[in-house]
Image 1: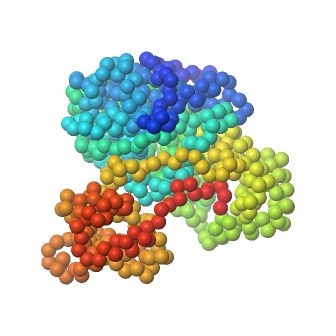
Image 2: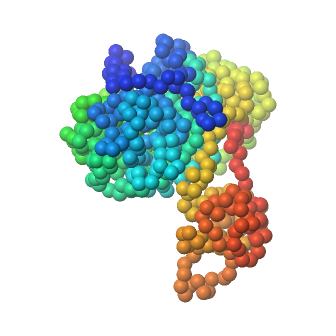
Length: 609
């Protein structure tokens, strides 16, 4: 296997280049005094890599933990290390354009204040979202507090709002819970604990907000001028995010690569869960960027990590990233068409030496193993074709049978210890997992499994694998707990379309309890000039926009009609303002509907049944 050279210090030189000032202390609190981000907790990374960390991941953490205000080129600055992502600031004729205002309003406000401390109190005259993930829009109100956004253009790629919101509605609870594992939220910041996530150090836990875009970027080649600054866009939908874009500042000769190109292998599917991304599309859009922007820039910067200076150096970075995703995609397809299944392909896949030995393609955030499985899943789905796996028992029942097959609990535990002594931690974890799921009260098996997860995590080059393993060990020992990110604040909920609001109710209906219910409710939204019909039948809540005209005359009447505004609907769904809503018909139908809406467990178990 090819490995990168530690004597190559280019990344460290680039990560330090343009440094102006750090935030001291780098500890950011919310209005109640709760710490939402603290980069100072990573001071231990100044030391040598210990035995409890992979040396490559330790190196990446040393780079990513650098924080402060940096100059990218004349008129362009970045604040790095004050959240999972970067905030970029571009100076215009009257003020400053903010690109990607971090996750939390508190972190965004601190980053903007650091910039203003050293560059002057410039007003925000524009804002750009590179793509539809929350770490690139959630801090928007920290940049433009309520009442200051009027007349300020907010630019985003076409489809931004749909994708920014839907990810937090349909599977948001499960994703948020799994993100605790992925980013190691509960782990101590220590050499034997959380040392980052490869893409950034950690997610902030402050207030998430969203100011809707006012300008949609709908095609490659679209040019906009914001506060006197010219920008040329390249749409890259279906790459790292469903809605994403690269863009060029031609006068500054600077290219923003969003999150399409980072100093790590990225995820084709994240461990927290997400729709599978298109590695083929991703590779092709990077290739398009090489040609489309050729010769027009001297520096490339992105939504994470540090910039790359020199046109040829940026092209090399783009080429390596293009080939990385293209190779993974094509070779996975080649092998699956030869009959290999996902786990076999993941074991057989090896990157070309030139890619494997580049620091920017190492699996600090995504991994070759789980990316290959994601590509397989995109094309063939979860079923690998062997009918033995078509109708397997669920985890607890399967675990009990495997323990029985091993000769009972004591025999299975002894066999697991044997695999552990042989250094086969992967199968030791499998056997011990059966013991824990077969009997979650088996404290001895839980402790042995936790020790296996400790070793697997501390030996991992991948930051998110490390966090998953170590968080699993923590929860086996201490149980479920910790902070849970809140993506349901009023501004986020108001950003949902009416259809998404109604979907958010439909996916929480307790189906079996609703089998015998049969009700119809019409919702007339006076501020949208539209009406929606909700039908609960056979346990499924469906909804549609009502048409007008001759067909409406034949429509059977609803049992209840609500006439209200969208803000009133939001309040109603939150259990507020019921007595203030204009209605006709049986209000008892609404109570019957709400009685069937469940509230998901935000701390559901993962490593125990």
